[in-house]
Image (cartoon, rainbow, N blue to C red; front, side, top):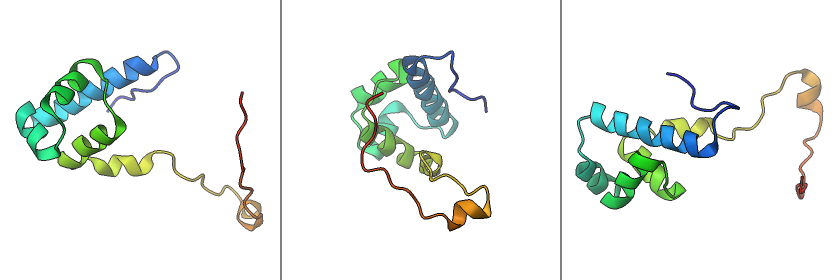
Length: 102
């Protein structure tokens, strides 16, 4: 599967590509928009808008993924960094208390 994130794509383009991917997955499992809407609890209009424009609330997106049994992909988002050396393991973790503005 091709990656959808690149430096050349805007966030809006990425969101639209996710909507297209979800539509493709819905059709692969032979579900209508209405069927996925009923199965997920996401309003039909919201699903249609997402498939066409990529615009959706995060909670609704997660509901659609769960209904399509695709929620495992969420585990790869924002994961903790892996250790690269023994020193990384032995150093106590530095937890930032607040982030920078820039």
